[in-house]
Image: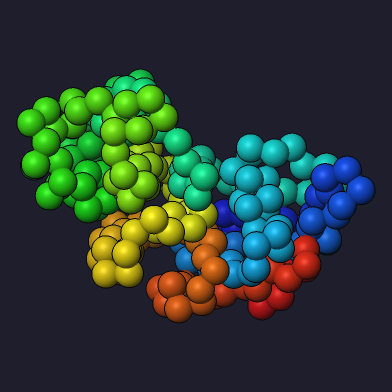
Amino acid sequence: MKDAITIRNLTHAYGEKTVLKGINLCIPEGQKVGIVGESGSGKSTLIKLIAGLYRVQNGELTVNGDTAVVMQSLSLFPLTIRENITCGHNIPEERIALAVKTAQLEDWLSTLPDGLETFTGERGGQVSGGQAQRISIARAIAKDAPILILDEATSALDVKTADRLMTSLSAWWKDRTVITIAHRPEALSYCDVIYRLEDGVLHE
């Protein structure tokens, strides 16, 4: 089994402040990885580097395959729910339907007169934080990438809804590589391995 992600001696700094200190990590294809840590420990920086949102400063980072990312600080486009899921790509209707179902959006959409064609408003102002998170998750599912990254992706949901969503997701992602960031270790029960990021250093 080859690695989906390989990280060697990865260091990252913002000005004089070093937030990642010599990170080494190999994630095999299909592995489910959890990363916990306090705010400011470097979790989001590590995720953004893996997702290609930040440039690598020092060290090596190899990602074998496309990534789909759901960030904690998400924002929707001032478009319809469908357009927020597809992002302008020509995605088959059955994949959109699967994304909606897996992201637990079906019940809510059934209450909207325009369903998927409902306008989300400026910066998603017409939907709640939890609904926006599930739309973003549906977007990631519809992308159908082999690597899924979740950064506190259920933080705006109540515990019962979050648990139901994670159960649905875990049935969908099967052989995909998944990296999940969370404050609470108990939110990572489905993971094969959990790492703790503390003061920029990764511990298993």
